[in-house]
Amino acid sequence: MKNHLKRIAAPKSWLINRKSSTFIVRPNPGAHALDKGLPLGVIIRDNLKLAQSMVEVKRLLNNNEVLIDGRRRKDHRMITGLFDVISIPKLKKFYRVELDNKGRLNIVELSEEQSRSKLCKVVGKKLLKKGVIQLGLHDGKTLAGLTSGGRGLSVGDSVIIELPSLKITKTFSLKPGAKVLLTSGKHGGISCELEQITSDKVVCQAGREQIETAKSYLFVVG
Image 1 (tube, rainbow, N blue to C red):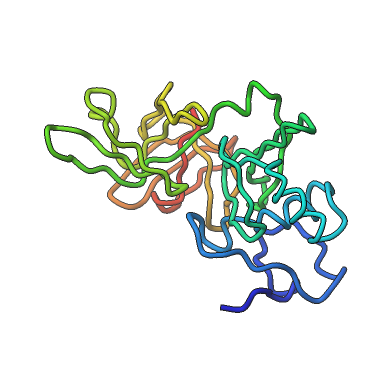
Image 2 (cartoon, rainbow, N blue to C red):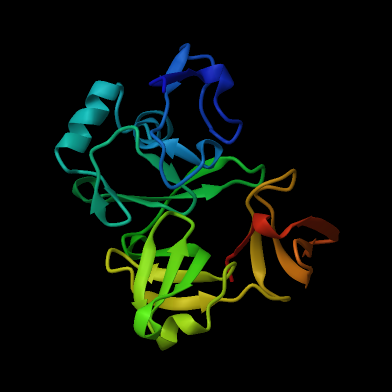
């Protein structure tokens, strides 16, 4: 796989200057699709302006100064996606990857307290031996060893987890009345209230507008 891609051809979800140079870092394959995440190095240099070059980015990473979801990361090509938490303790800076109302990846500053938790979507659920529940989350994390706490959760629900312990502290069900974020499609980035659910389609209300979209595009946020 090529190490770079042309800025002009980068996903529309990337909030970058497409004319400053010809190429930009291509992220390594990871938990997020190419259009659902940004390379960590690009976030540090282009979005946060905490470095002027990729050499400076690598120095910052090699000094163990950057954490993603509470774990130290050194790979400037690591793909960093929706609701991932970026912490730089030495600078007392904390951020989260969100979507703006046009469906573009936006880096939002947090307080240190806010950086200690993360919202995740349940994308898989398995029943293991001895009745233990295992959940797969949208960011590639796996929560294993769950018993009664995981039994009531379904694919499509969301959880708030502590970082870095991954302990579930709150759950949100995918059901009518839930507050949801649309993560893809022409309405990507819009927050709305879920009204109806069918097998693969949903109807949501965003202000005065009624939106019909794919069920897979929903991310329950409240």
